[in-house]
Length: 331
Image (cartoon, rainbow, N blue to C red; front, side, top):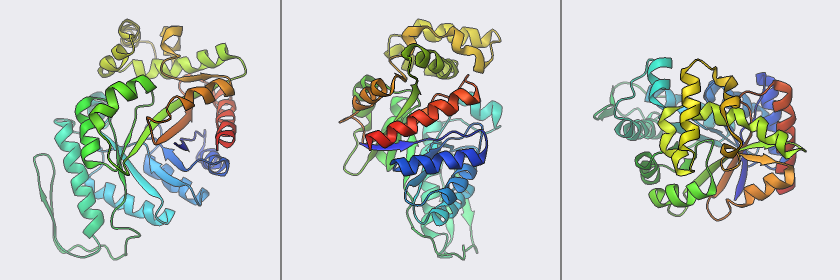
């Protein structure tokens, strides 16, 4: 199982420094999320700070950019990294697309499939000058007289898809080069819910995300992880995910607190202890290492990250240092 890492930084300088430290510790891929920063801009910054590790978006939102822009950014990032880029895409939740980005989210299954098809076509043929035409149910492209005058590093860049529900998970298995889990994904969820729908074939990369909260005192680590649970539990569409873990009532309580006006960064207080252990890798370094080992045989790659939401920068910084130290020990 490959060990990879999603770094944190209060500044882009700190982010790239953490990425370099994680690479030096043995992380094989550095992943960049899209929420408070642009995944592609962060990936460009990290490209210059790394040399051997892969650089991937985990994830870039698939519907908030045109497929053309996404393809061009992927080609640029593959050039910047010397062929080390992985394009991770996800649909995102309806509320995120419609309310934050004014983006169309209807028919996400068809839209994501067609988006990937268009991106792959552009990456493969934009340098040839041949017409770029696509007529789908949600995507349309009609470009003539365009030729990207730069040879691509690769005519096929790996595309990984993030998915939680069964339909999108099956789509990831059919058309993706890899699958990226939600930030919260237990071994039981992976074994019983994901893999039967994913049906990964040879060479397919199953990337499970492990949010880590590491402290010398396990109780402190668990409470520092509570903000992560609160942030994600505020999303009503994750109802089935939490119900799978026997946490339906707890999830409903967090959603209720959020709707009553509690800020996302303050939802930790709505998270009971029993929500934490099944979904976050919390505890001492040895305890977290043991939790990571539980994914062996289920995932081909684990993407580690520090617990961020609801924590002060100095707390996140200390946790990140412990996670990177653990990567060095594991690799």
